[in-house]
Image (cartoon, rainbow, N blue to C red; front, side):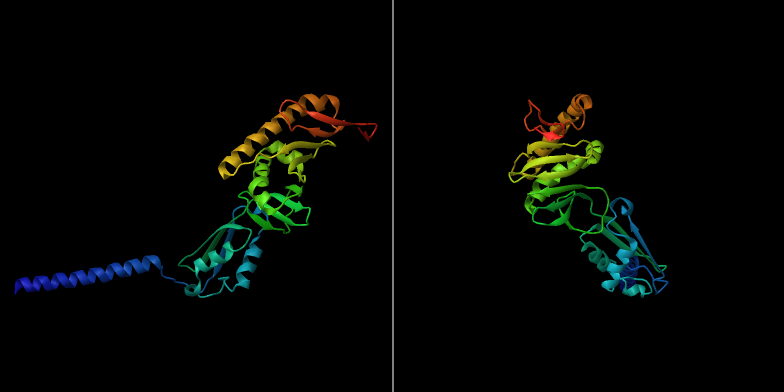
Length: 267
């Protein structure tokens, strides 16, 4: 009899413990919402001042259009995952995180995609390229970016031009000195500087099927060209004059070919 009683008590205790654990897990995953109505929405855009594609008001508008803005909604009806998925669908959003608290607050955090170059090709296309080669639509974005023109299709932009732009934007001097990249019909590359009335021709970007190898080749290529050009600026143009030449060709490693103006005439 005692053994049966002990067994019964043990079973009851196991049942009680199981119920307690289930309630504890449920409570942890769904914190008690002491405020049934959302009283505050906090939106943080990590790089709002540097990228500038999205503002807090625009994030609010996106959510309102999709009937997901949580303010004054019942907290039980606020779904953080739906809010995240909605914001991630924006072409300007890199990451989106959302969570709610038990005191009626909803927090939304966003990072934006980083534009590195603006494309305005010969067909009239106008868009941005981010640092991963992703295409971003034209917008009100006004920050200084290098503009790429000429013979540029989407494939070339995502597979070649992006690595050229990254190298230029990663260097403070060239980021400020180069204002335009022009791609010629044969895919030769021209750089238009901010200072000096000349165009710099660097040749075609190195070709490679493998993405990683292509990135490394272009990185080495651009660093070699910009180092040579910087030396020429320092020891050549500083003495000869920044407006003496209208075209500087640094395609070949062992020479720099310059075409100069004479009395404002090109020769």
